[in-house]
Image (cartoon, rainbow, N blue to C red):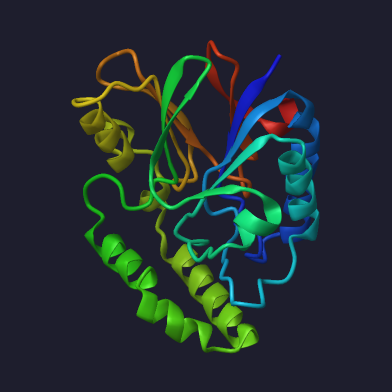
Length: 246
């Protein structure tokens, strides 16, 4: 039996039991390797990622080694840049062998159509975030950031990331059902093109939603900070699984 696997939001490097969570993620990857048709890392795998011309952030050796085993074996590994690990400039493609995606993509597996994205900036009510994203992806801003010494740049980025995380209220984290911006976005997409499944990260909630056409499903993948969940598709159903239970 072969599966397509989806996982997101490990935020490795955040300082929240990073080594323990990386080891757990690597253990999960080892457990699924024999059954993997394709693997999708759906964004914010790292709490911060930036590639200088000759330097990448320290750490993640175990994770990268395991992912190289996948790509060397000819298994497709897709990496979506999230809002925390947006600055990828070739290392992940050329050294690890992953396919890097910066925008939503569509894919077909076992005859079913998928709409796939990290999820940041999609749907209504994201004007502030879209402004920040346009700033972070501007070449002049990336050039200026690259002029900083990596020790200073990484510390600044992780401090900002931690402050951003603390600023989220309980209401921000609550699942809002049909009022979720990504649910609204998916229903809008379905007005012009049919998809069997929508898969998103970003929200740090683990939920399945049946969309307005009563046929398509949307999966929120959860995270590897609290939930340790992933999704797998066997050709018939797309399910959410907790790692300890698999």
